[in-house]
Length: 568
Image (cartoon, rainbow, N blue to C red; front, top):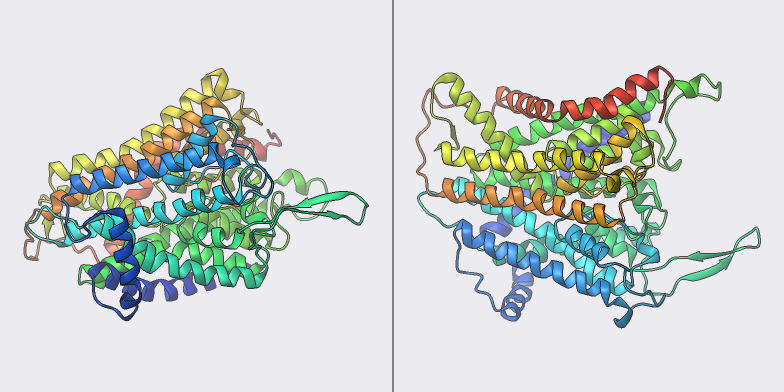
């Protein structure tokens, strides 16, 4: 246990030490300052703008920003969809894979990678060519992450600018994030992964003879490069079906640690960048503090539950009840619990253990984190603007309590902004609950279950929660490659992504138009410990009110039944 606690503390300390300077760098990138590396990147960016035929200097209002964002992502979806269905005609296909098989699987995958979800209803090493992996999926890993970061930056401009309807230029934000942040760090991560043994080549699959005299096919491919942006962009889609539990993707404890850091570093860096861009670093520290409090709470619950395991195992007199089912021995319990909590606190979805094998309360943690909107650090950009939903709700409630017009950063939060905020909160929540309810009663939904009872409900609930939260991990017992699930999950991904992005851009546009009021004795301080505690409390209360009934029928009742010796 001591080693595990040391790992947890070290992880948080290293994360903060890395994220703060990254936040400073990102502030310079999006402020447009001529930093030294900018001279290197500017010619590349100019070439991209010229090729795309866009004017990166013309700023947009929130509607123009949203339209550009949606059209760009629709185009990316179409491209990935076509590539999957024609990969047998395209290069870099040494295994001569045919098309992915069905249009609905191709559509689900295209939507998945465009929305930063990376839900995988297929086995990558047995169905996708290198061309599809690189040009289709890896490219979308960069662009979907950059899209989320662009929205976060636009939202910050909306909060910090005064009496204007302009929140920046989508193309400028997208390209700068990709070229100056995601690409350089991904190259560095790729080098580290290759040095540690992650595969990176374009060779055909290798057939070898095992010690037992049988033949085994060893998959090859450009794994390390996809692994880097998969983590850094909080995408999560693995080259292999086993994802980061596969030794070719995640071979050592060092790669495991680095992958977890990569998942959180950009989301936390954006929070620190927020403090810098508001010219009050304490604003960023307060939000980061609330995120860390929630993260430690969730990690503690998951680790405690997995450490105590299933009491029925202890009764078999085969050793400790610690739950190691579905976990890699080379990582152990501590690193597995940490990875589980990290990947579902962010909208990543990469896994180094099988979540379907988690104890009931161990599985409760990733479910709840995704249901809250993955705002505990969250995805690249998505975590920040998702957390701002709760920040604005908190400020609004406090304002009502003291009888004062709610304000944030000196700007009044009025009915118009709160309507958009509530839309951003309700769309993913309604999607999760409504779609899970439908799948729980129709034959097409029930046909995909691997378990009965509350665990079966948890499988369905986890699937739609993962989709609407744009996470991509799964309780693997759910058979999701069917017409019903491919289409329903695809719709959930779209609603979860754009049902939050569009309202938050609208809030950004509305806030940018406002004047800044001077601080007075009645101004609620949003940099204090009191604010952090209130923010954490509002997040947990809203989550409990929204999802507790569903969670009670799933993991909570399963935990009670497990203590009585009943399993599913």
